[in-house]
Amino acid sequence: MLKSALALLFTLAVTTAPTTLACEPECRHGVAAAFAEHYVPVVQVAVNDLSNTFASTLFNANATLPNHVAAVVPEQTLRSSLTASLSDTLSLFVDEATGKKLESGIFSVMFSEEDPFKGDCNAPPRRLDRNMPPPGVSWTREECEKMDYICGNPPSICHFLPEVKQRIVKRIRSQLEDYATFDNGFLVRNVVQTVKQTTQGVLSHYGAGSMVNDPSVTTYINALISNAIQSLDVWATVHVKQLCDRDSDNQACNSWDEQIIPEILKWP
Image (cartoon, helix red, strand yellow):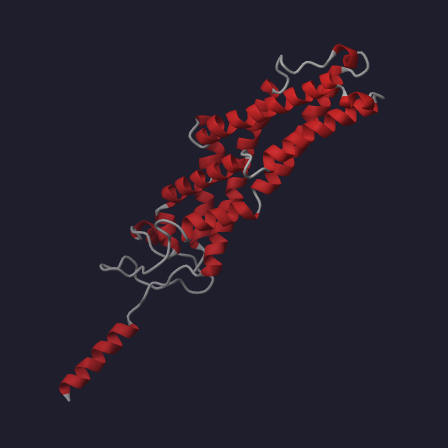
């Protein structure tokens, strides 16, 4: 009888002990969305690098407008039109690169891949004294400091913020590099199309539309495309790989920690 009573008391003690709960799906998506918002300027920094690379390499000496075409079509007008059109294309790319794929990539590296912020947050010795804050109340900075192992609650995410940011930057670099490959096609396809359509449009505007099929014009367009693809390659293999490692990127990459921490800790 006494043994049964003690067993019951032990069971009640275990089942009623405070348990730190995990960040549930709504919390995970909310945290990922908050990070995605802060990384939009980082993507913009990378795209600005690409724009600068286009400006320095698109009109290299190998891309010279044939003399008989330049007699009809002002080359500077053509260059200005190409620059403006590529700027529009890159603006569309920013929308693509900062859309759902950015948030889903952040979600994956935080909650689905290696060392996900999931699982039990009650490993002994317990770090926190409560399972979650009352409704409408955030976790505290002190709880952020105490939650010193990876598990499934917001204080753990907060504690490992530098690692979280490293994971996200690595994923953004990978995604941007993918956009610049022939396999993915978004940047390559749209940049090539922009160069072709803009050049043909300017020629047509000046009454030289029939020159589009001129072999020398084809050579000129192909040279522009080759330079653009070379720009993409330099961007992907040099600039993107350095993203957030350069001093000039510090404002976009690291100035918002004090803004994201409350966003993390507000989730139950």
